[in-house]
Image 1 (cartoon, rainbow, N blue to C red):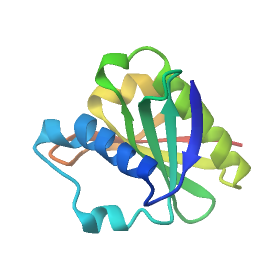
Image 2 (tube, rainbow, N blue to C red; image 1 turned 30 degrees about the vertical axis):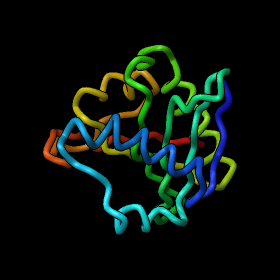
Image 3 (cartoon, one colour; image 1 turned 90 degrees about the vertical axis):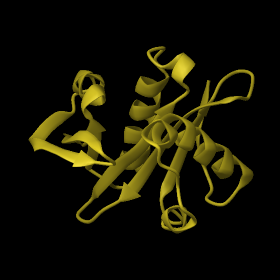
Image 4 (cartoon, rainbow, N blue to C red; image 1 turned 180 degrees about the vertical axis):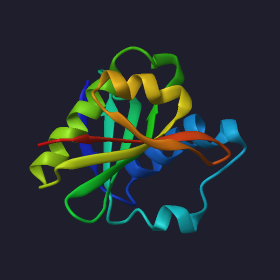
Length: 144
């Protein structure tokens, strides 16, 4: 598996948007708008390709203030969920964030994803809240 950063507004980015739409948006009856995607021009886009050069996963890293980066839009092809791709991508995203000077990763986890992040040493902070019509939890991890 090859995990690497891609550039915004490239064919690889378009492929990643299609994966995110399939995994994260369509099941909720939502779709990305051009305005939503335009805000991602200065964010980090991490992808995973299998040995057949098929896109199998995506993570967005959105810089925040005070050396904090937010992990967003984590998506793995449904047929491959639970195979370790997500874990490898999160670990790689933490390395990239650390290399770029970030010391804290935050995220909004769907309630069904909380156990996954707990296994990777993220902790729940605060009470559940609703985002994109489903329950989420704020989670964080120091990446020193």
